[in-house]
Amino acid sequence: MLKIQDVARHAGVSAATVSRVLNGRSTVNPELAARVHSAVRELGYRPNGVARNLRRRQTTLWAVLISDVGNPFFTSLVRGVEDGGRQFGYSVVLCNTDENRAREAEYIAVALADNMAGVIISPADDSTDISALVAAGTAVVTIDRELAETEVDAVLVDNEKGAEMATAHLLESGYRRIACITGPRRMSTAMRRLRGYQRALRAFGLPSDRSLVRHADFREEGGYSAMAALLDEGVEVDAVFAANNLMTVGAVECLTERGVAIPAQVGVIGFDDIPWARLFRPGLSTVRQPTYELGRAAAQLLADRIDNPAKPAARMVLQTELHPRESSSPRAC
Ligand code: RIB
Image (cartoon, rainbow, N blue to C red; front, side, top):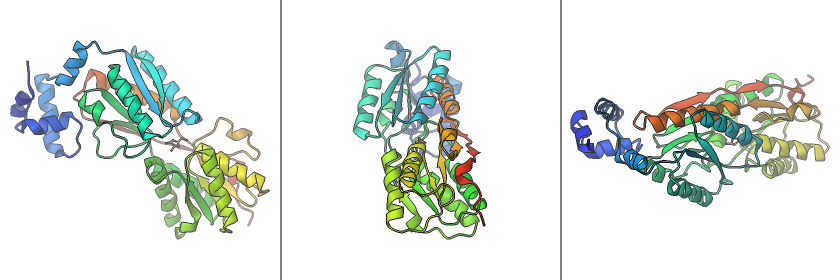
């Protein structure tokens, strides 16, 4: 039976390098990593972890870990995963982490204990630890949010481009004092959307005014409180870009309760399309994420990873779409 040492000899590297590559460490020189992957393919080596899972008769279950079961964004995403998984003979177990790292770790332990064939995870935050899954040889795909320094498959959207599109749309509509309500600093989607907002302002020749940027919780309450703080502090605002669906709803709720006219006094655009966005009066401008397609793509990558554990990690970045409606109509000059 082939051992790591055989792969190392064939690739002309140390056994430790082979182990680091197969355990998804991104600290390995890419040229050496490529030699290891080639040697694995040429020799037909299967890491013990996979052989052990085969001996243990792995289940046909996938665990899908999401960070907020109350958010319609995840409903459509999980639908895509489930439809994709069933196509390959897998069933899906839904785990809601509520962006709580301890609960997330519990669900990762359950997936390992129950020999689940694979895990799709929207990390609770940037420091989510998936090393136990990688070390066990469990196939993993991250979705929606990124984990730096891990060599695992990832399915994302171009968050910066989407946020830049939203902000540029407001600028082109005549808004100049644009607030950005984004999520927590510890989450990649929050920071990438903030960077897209700042990039649009720079491209338009406008300075980034820190008083216009607020970090909230990616939930309705946080969007409401952030909007209320901007108004209560007397910050001059003529538009708001909210970096996810729930915070957009919260911000609109606050503006409406305060009698602020949308878009006459404050224009609004939100990241994530919302099933009922066009039912708002005025209709809500949004940046749509291809949520169902994200789920389907993650299912495809996970099935491929289970069949071919040693192939190099893939990173898929899908594009968002701008859906302008009345809430960001051009400002009357
Ligand atoms: O509303 C869901 C979206 O906002 C997802 O991208 C999630 O990561 C949060 O950032």
